[in-house]
Amino acid sequence: MQAVNDQIEALGATVVALTPQIPQKNQEMIDKNELSFDLLHDAGNTYADKLGLRFTVPSAVQDIYNQFGIDLPGGNGDNSGTLPMPGRFVIDQGGIVRAVDVHPDYTRRPEPEKTIEDLKAL
Image 1 (cartoon, rainbow, N blue to C red):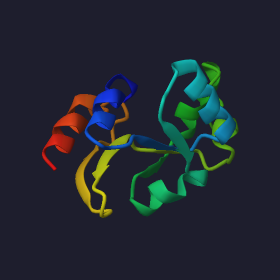
Image 2: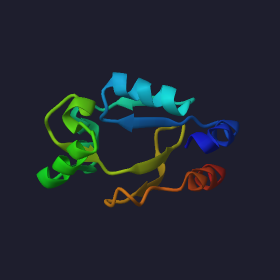
Image 3: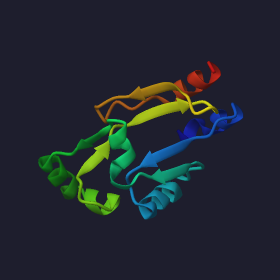
Image 4: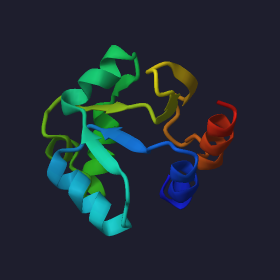
């Protein structure tokens, strides 16, 4: 989203990302990737769960994560072993959801350019 953030802002919109990562990890990601938008903390994936977008990472996959140095409980600040499905929502100024792209396969992420198209269609 960073690659198209200037275009999004030029259309009068704001990018905000919601993540289960603890604020310290979010700040590390902001610094490392030079992000110019906010990453908000969804503690325990609570909001993702309310949207039906939270899933439990199987223990075998968590073991693989650990082998690669990915500490899911440490990064998320809880032992739920859950992650949100990657998604993109376009919400208008009145709070109405105008476009949604979500896929249960975490490797199929919404293309940032689609956000531009959806914003132009408003």
